[in-house]
Image (cartoon, rainbow, N blue to C red):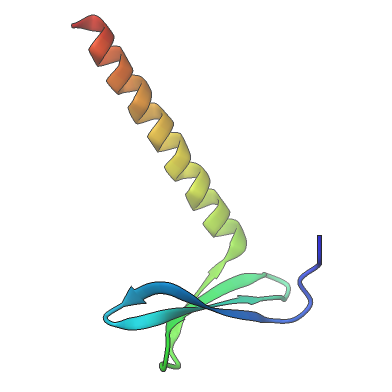
Length: 76
């Protein structure tokens, strides 16, 4: 695996208000993902750890909802 030593920029197929999203992974003391609309300077920087935690929370919520749905189907 390659260590993150310099910023990496990519253009996404996802669009927001008709503009493609630009994603930049930035190294540093706190590595961040910076996302902005193409053609704009302002965007949002989010620490990579927070994105990981958010993804884990979404997955846990999904699993929990499946269990509840399965339990409801089994009792009827």
